[in-house]
Amino acid sequence: MPVPVPVQSVERAAAIIRVLAAEPEPVTLARVADAVGLAKGTTHGLLKTLLAVGFAEQEPGSARYRIAPQLFRLGTARIDLNLLRSRAINWTDALAARSGEATQVAAFRDGHVVTVHHIVPPNATEKALGGGPETPLHASAVGKILLAHDVGAYRSIDRIVLDGLTFHTITNKARLDMELAGVRDEGWAGEVEECEPEIATLAAPIRDQHGSVVAAVGVGGHRDRICDPRGRPRQALITLVVRTGRSISRELGHGRSQ
Image (cartoon, rainbow, N blue to C red):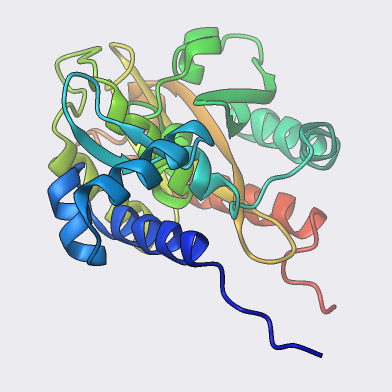
């Protein structure tokens, strides 16, 4: 039986994808060609094919290229949203009852935060959920959880301006990157008046059976109830939200013996 021969064009396209994926910023055709050791004409033809299939994209208004966010999502853990809701609803409702605040379960889909389930107890406020159906990734606690753990979500903000919704909103990407590093280290996210004046939110990750973060559970309310007199999120509430995230994760099989 003959030994399979590698397809040269596929090898070259794969090399270009690796270059684009490794670069933090969009790169020029010349830079890509030099990195893969090909002529500019050949590289340009391969890039056009990668653009056509959605694996690469060209920066608007320039001749620079970058990896397409959807390519990262090919390997990103996803979960059926109906299954997620069915597993999360009891725990989320219990969180609302114990905290007295609005609660939310959210996932990242098609460039947006999608609310899977939410509940607003009496005396709580709908706007505490970080902007309702247009929950901003960079200015909400659930959004920060998704940005910190979902590469597709993170790359999606490369194409937008980080809107300053309030005086406290993080609009500098370097500062946001530092914030997301802290989210990964601490295991929870928070924001105080970044999305809505006088509103604060907290969130924790929800993991599937493989340990991948597939969603976030959050709680939000008036700043004075969510935070202590110094404006820091109350530790008891952080613990409650993190435990809720872990409980939902267990419902999805995380931490169970296979």
